[in-house]
Image 1 (cartoon, rainbow, N blue to C red):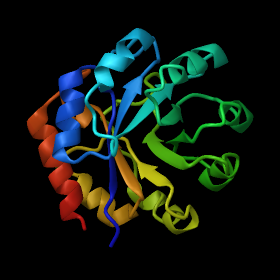
Image 2: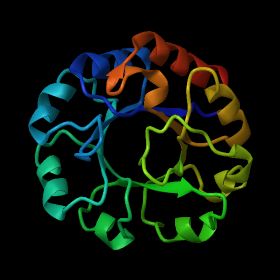
Image 3: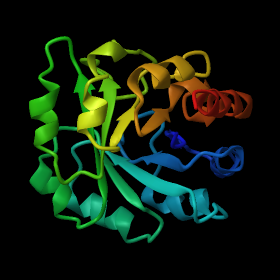
Image 4: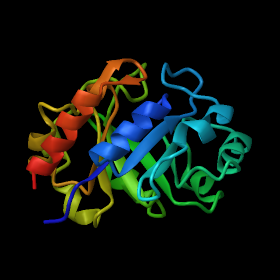
Length: 210
C-alpha cells in the first residue's frame, strides 16, 4: 500500500517547518491570505523555508488572490505548488503554469463530481469542511463516507482535510483512502504555532493507517 502523502499547513515559523520535515511530513503549507491568523508576508518566505530538505514540498496557499501576488510569491523561487482556497476558476489557476491544488468545500448538498470536473488540470483536489465564515483551519470534520466513492475516480490526486487531528487521522484514511492528508489546527499549540508532539502523533497516525 502506498504511503499517504502528508502536509502540515499554516506554518509561520522556521523551527516548525524544520520539525515537520524531520518528523516525516512530505509538504508544508504557507498562507498568503491576509485575513488568516496564519498569514505570512512574501518577505518572510525565504527564511521560513531555509534549510528544508528538497524532498519537502512548499505549498503556497491563496484565497482569491491577484495574479500579481501569486507571481510575487513564485518569484522567490521557494514554492513548489500553488493552493487555491477561494472561488478561483480553472483558467485563473492554470495561467501560472505551475502545479496547483484546488480546494473544494464539502457541503451537505454538494455536487462534488461536477465541481471537481471543473478542475481537471489540478494536480491535487483538496476536500475541506465548509464554513460560511472561515476558510480552512476550522477544526471541523465532515462526513467522510460521502467522499469515499471519489477516491478511485480521482486517480491518486484526492487530499483530505477538515478537522483532522492525531486522534482521528487513522480512521479518516482507512475510510476515504485518499492520496494525502492535510492538517493545520489539529497540530497547533495556538493559531499558527505548531506543537511538535502533536505533529509527531499525527504522522504516526498516518503511518499506522498503512
